[in-house]
Image 1 (spheres, rainbow, N blue to C red):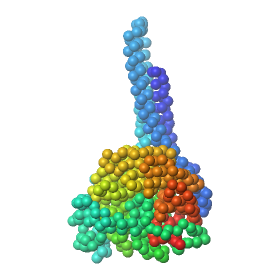
Image 2 (tube, helix red, strand yellow):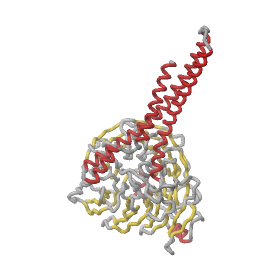
Image 3 (cartoon, helix red, strand yellow):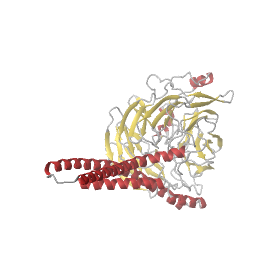
Length: 606
C-alpha cells in the first residue's frame, strides 16, 4: 500500500505540474487554430460555412477548458488523498518494523548515510507535493488573472466594494452633467400592488426639484400593462411569454416576402430588440464607441442614436471580449419613460424616450473573459442588474429616475452570463437568477433573499423559466431542475438528458421547452419532468425560444425561424428564413415580429 500510494502521488503530482506549464505556454481561451480561422474570415467575411466552423471550434475550446478545470480540481484532491494514504502507511510500517525486526549491527556511518538519504527523500517529496499543489492552485487562478488583465485598462483596478461609485445625471434645464456619490435609497414600505403600486420611497440625496416633480407624475405600470409591451429580454418579465396576437408564420428575408421594412444596424451587438409603444430600442458597440439606438417600429426610421460616453469610472480602452459576446450583449429594458442600457465596460446609462440623457454610472469594469451579457429588468421604478463577475456575485436595484442605488447585495456565487427573471409567487414579486452554484429568488422591493438552492455548476448562460408555481433552471454539464420558489425550496424533479448552453428554457401551459446548442428542441411535462417529444432542427441554436399564440418561435444561428406548436405533438408549422445569420430573440407587437439579424433589423408582418 505504501509503495502504491507513493507512486500514485508522484504520478499525479507530475501531471499537475506539466498541466500548469502547458497553461503558461498556451493562453487559456485562445487558440492558434481559432485565430487563424478568424484571420481567414477577415479575408472572406461572407463565408457562412467558415463562420459556423469558427463558432463550433470556439465551443470545443471552451468546453475543453472547462473540462480541464475539473481535472485540475480532481487531481489536487487525489494528490492530497494519495499523500495522506502514503503518510499513514509509512507510520504504520515504521511502527511494525520497530516491533518485529531484530536489531542489526549497523555502523554509525551507515546510520548517518541512511538518515541523510531519508531526509533528502522527504525534502524532495515535499517539494514535489508543494509544487503540484501550487500548480493546481495557480492553474485555477490563472484564468482569473488572464481576463482581469484583459478587462481593465493598464494601471486601473476593478472597482471594489468600498470604492465610491459616481452617478452622473443630466440637468434638463441647464443641459450639463453633475456628479454625486451614489447612496442607497430607502426601502419601500408595504406590499407591492401588482397593477398600480406606489413607487419606491424617495431619497433626498442626489435629487432635485425637477426629479421630485417627475417622480410624482410618472405612473408605475403593473402586470397587465407590461403584457401589452415587449419591454425587456424575452418579453415582459423576462419569461419568454408574449401576449400579442396575429403574429406571422411565413416570410422570406431574401425575396422580401412579408418584410414590411428592413434597415441596416450601425454597430454590432448580440442584444435583442425591445419595444414600448411605437419605439424600438437596440444597442451596439465596437472599439470606437457604445450606442443606444431608437427606431420608429412602424416605419423603421432611426429616431435617435446616442453614445454612452463621458461616464466617470468608465475604462479608457474597451475591455477584451470574445467575438460571440462582444461589447453590447445585454438587452435593454424600458418602462415607457426611459430606456436603460448596460455594456461590457460596466457602464449603465438611461435615456428619455426622446433621446435625452437622464443619468449614467459605471459599476466597475466586470472581470469577464467572454464579456458581460446579463440583460436588465425594470419594475416599480427600479432597474434590476445581475452583476455576477469574476470578482464575485452581486445584484443591484437602481432608481429609474436618478440611477442611485436602492439596494445592493453581495452573493456567494461565481460568474454568470444569465439574465434575471421576474415571477409573481405568493405575496411577493421575486427576482430569480441562475448562477454557479445557486438558483435563487429575491424580493424585488428590498433585495432580501427568499430562497436558494445549490444545484447548478459550470459557466451558466441560460436564464430560468417559470410556470404555475415552478421555476426551471438548467445548464450544460449540470442538470435540469424544477424548483418550488419558496423558503425551504426543494428540487421537485431533475433531468440530465438535454441541457442548454446559451438558450434559456420557456414554460407555458404545463409544458417546458428547452433548446440545446446543437439544435434539439425538447418538450417536458412541467409537473412530472417526463419527456413528451424531441425535435432535431439540424443547426446550432444560441437564441432562446419564445411562445406566442400557442406557438414556439425559435431562431437558429443561420437565421431560420423554427415555428412549432407548443403542445404535446411538437408539430413543425413553418421554417421561414431571414437570409442572414441571427442570434437574438425576436420582439413582438401588434401582429408583427421584429428580428435583429447579423447586419440588419427587420419588421415582418402579414
